[in-house]
Length: 158
Image 1 (cartoon, rainbow, N blue to C red):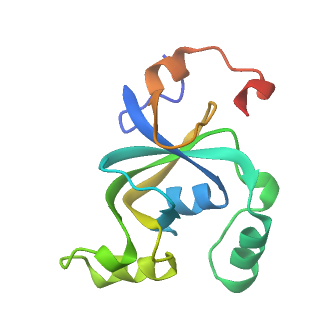
Image 2 (image 1 turned 180 degrees about the horizontal axis):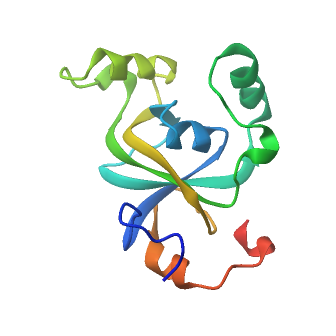
């Protein structure tokens, strides 16, 4: 059994979604509740937060310079693997939000373009990084297989 396995660590096949940094870190640590995409999904439930190898440099600089979010230094952000888990609770265009949403949640859709879909996350928490390759869209990750596999070569993760 891997040293990562613990009672609150996810197991089995779980949906995942890839994000560039610092978006992956912000979602996994509960600072970003909504991310926007040009496509929607009917999936709701647990979703692994996968950090791709990319960095949105301008967004990182903005967060670092204009907010009080304690974002790690660039070299401390993790890439090429699962870095957190959250629940995907809603996928909606900003003009189609359900009436029963909390005001805090509704406010996070303010930055979503009207033609895009906002993915609303809650119960987010960081996880020890599990190296693995990402994919486009929502994809499945078998956590048990990843934890049981020998470490991948760094070049295989991207």
